[in-house]
Image (tube, rainbow, N blue to C red; front, top):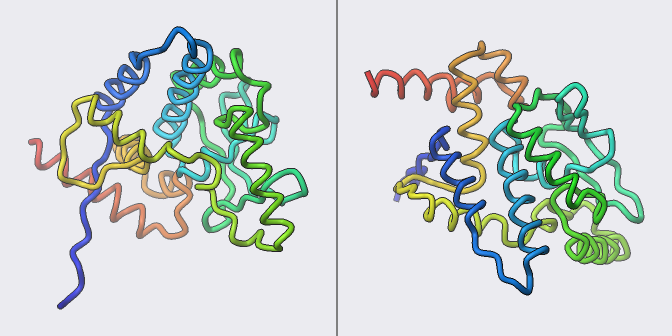
Length: 230
């Protein structure tokens, strides 16, 4: 039957991102759930901003903590590091175990500071509300009791985030036959940075284990896209 053809990725562009954020900001808020739903919108905006502004993988963004280990607002830098699991904190290992630091753009810093101001103390995780954190902690305890820590997955942290993003992209007017999900934010960051920095720098920013990945999916893609537009 042959090898199935891989579906091409959709790379989020700056205009796409602005429309996605606008869509999130305009999500309806009920009178009864005004505070909770407003905080959720701020959290989504911050989550999408750090992924698009720093090219983070889903797991990298989902595992960020409010402690000084991950965020340095004074220097405007996000630090991605491995985390040893404990009784009350899930384990986390970056893909390829490559810790790195990335400069945050102004819009990402502003979104994170807004989230910190209104909901920075409900959970040790940036993007988990108190209820989500308690469910996560209960589930982690179960994994620990059953000695299944190695099976822990970042998707255990944020349930409907992947599905919701597709819905917001549709509402934002993004129409494509290409593969479109949260990873498209990281793809967009990579293509943006490929236009302004050398391949070896981009490789470091993206956390790629091989420069070949950087070249194939970002540098060559960017060059091809530029030729298509010219």
